[in-house]
Length: 102
Image 1 (cartoon, rainbow, N blue to C red):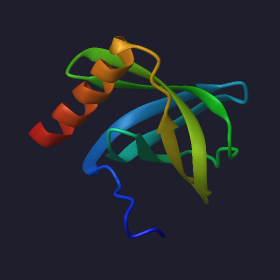
Image 2: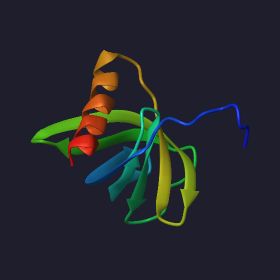
Image 3: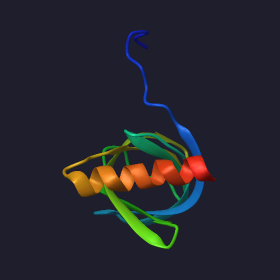
Image 4: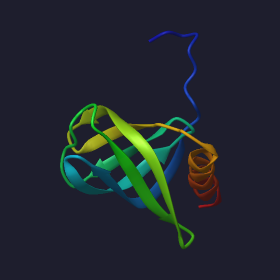
């Protein structure tokens, strides 16, 4: 690992999530979240490099973020967010704000 590359701070967040992709629907729980992605524990293993959309209910609001599976370890998967617009950035900020308030 390059010591000069810093990771985005991660925030613990226990929240039900869903990942919709061409492989179907995966249901899981968020373990932690950062500005660049999240770690989820899913009901079954996800396929690496799968793209899709992760959704969560935050304070009675559904947030939806495009993401790609970049790491798999059993049923845990690291998802990297793919931000295309201000709505995507706002959704990530809502998740992080919710984690900080929990």
